[in-house]
Length: 136
Image 1: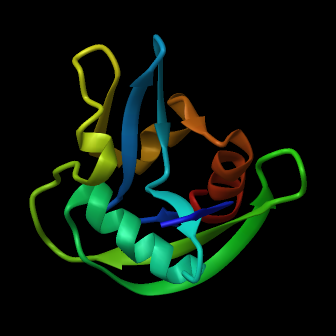
Image 2: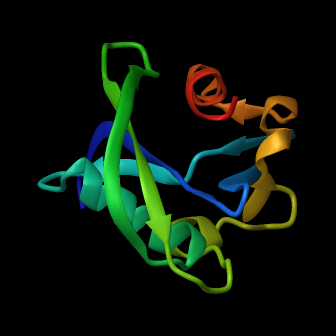
């Protein structure tokens, strides 16, 4: 599929934990919200459902838009959605699973909400908005 250059991301909170993707890339360790590039002809909501399945092995439902922000130069808007997920074992799939070579890796993890302010969660603007509006 052809990527549009726009991303869509999910905010998944369950049992006082948030589901994030823990990454190590080029020696830098950080967390990101599940999500990815919107493909041509795909809605942002469909992108979030597809990416959650690929990145966590969980089925998504109740996708609700919460905010968007400019996260890349050029004015591209990056929508964020609250999403519910079903039960299941977390497992990375999709193209990211093939990139795991021991040095750089992707790992879906449930993180205690109370720890969000302490971790390197990017994009920083979305982290700040999450803490300010929903985690106080």
